[in-house]
Image 1 (tube, helix red, strand yellow):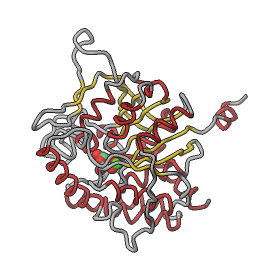
Image 2 (tube, rainbow, N blue to C red):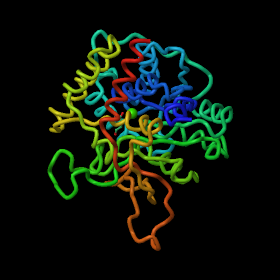
Image 3 (cartoon, rainbow, N blue to C red):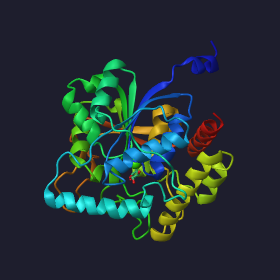
Length: 352
Ligand code: BDR
Ligand code: CA
């Protein structure tokens, strides 16, 4: 059988996308929905790009509606981090509000006018219960893509003791290992983190859950982190995304306008020339891992520090001194493969 026939015969990857939509989440969801290699079983929502998880659930519904995939189930998840002190809670919440409105607009989707219609219909099953049910129904087949804080997965691990064995793979957009600009300082890209100088937003908003996940006992090939080090390699300009989505009708116009807001913030507020596709990189890894290079590392997460709260810490000491590798991190990506895949997915959804 030729390689092409073998590939086209492969069953699609069963995905659960855990998300806090979010402009870049919206694009990542569409990347998955429009890719024939993906079978999106459910979206699960979490606080994050808004401190109000209901806004996140409504946004998930809005994205499914405009993508003409409104039958994909949505299950609402955590409204707060797993563990926090009251002082830390208000700090994180203030930080989320400031960040979410600035980067993602007051509605979380770039304040595109007229705003998208859609409201999530409440349901008794929680996000964590949904993850466990689907993992049990399809043992070894479900890939969980985490695009927000890791709270729902931490909760799922608490209610299902063998979840690590049941899931095929977990791909996390989160963390930052090095300054993307090496030893340069005082450049817009020089920080190790984005929400603080040392932490990436998804990990910072619930580092306790993130720590629980990385200590749950997944082998590195089944717990993959797509960090800022990787996503900042996928920088694009507004004109590029506009061109990419120009032929994709109402969905393309929505994603294009939302990204105009996103690019404007990165360029005019943060002083960056271009902006990264954070969440799409994680979905893309789940579907097209061959377009990435990776490395297995020993990683831990700071849950107490003041300046380093939420920092992802890699132990780079000699093998004899460090712990065993517990996560796989993505180190490189063929950026044109990602662009092409986004373009094909969004056009396919529009033409469906
Ligand atoms: C992550 O934070 C959120 O703002 C984005 O949606 C992405 O998941 C990037 O740090
Ligand atoms: Ca996100």
